[in-house]
Image 1: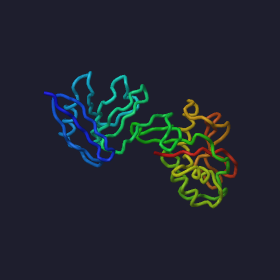
Image 2: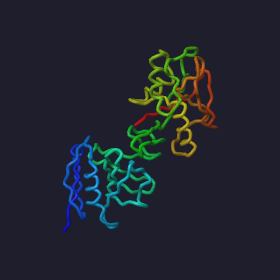
Image 3: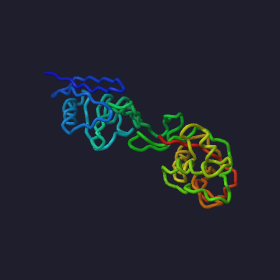
Image 4: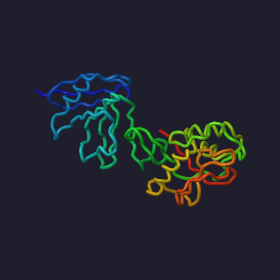
Length: 256
């Protein structure tokens, strides 16, 4: 006797119904629910029939863009037990698979080179593509880093994830037009990348993923003392501390 699997997303108003063997699941899940091991196993057993039908897989991580047509078909359900999240495969394109979170707001998995959620170009992804960094498609106005001779408190972060705070600290600590204020003016949540974020952007420029760059140096938001800040040469890749009162190019980025 055939049974039915029904997963309902209250927020997204998405209903997925799939004939499956050998168990029935009629649970309704809402954003924020914690799925029990029994519920996860029920989902798995209800849809994991055979290769000709939509199946389910269970892992302790989120799917990535590389979990694609080479292994899975559209409609496959992926259970991430570490986060208690179910995903469904909505696009199985090779190297560009799109998995959507069930029971959520329809989160999209992004790949490097995709158009980002704010219209930029994705150049770095984390959490299987749920999060990452996107870059503006064009340069902003070239300008000085700003406040030459002044140490800006807090603007020394160099790691990935520190650019946004650096930018906020520069804007708060310097009343001049700065590379940080120019990047921030590109739009809500945009900022001047940190030294390491800028290097990630350079790597994707070299790979022809993100374009529109000119030869020469681009400012990072990472301070290198009262008179210097980090720049990256986009015609060679070197990073160096340079005087803050020199005019260089600016390319805003944004985290998602």
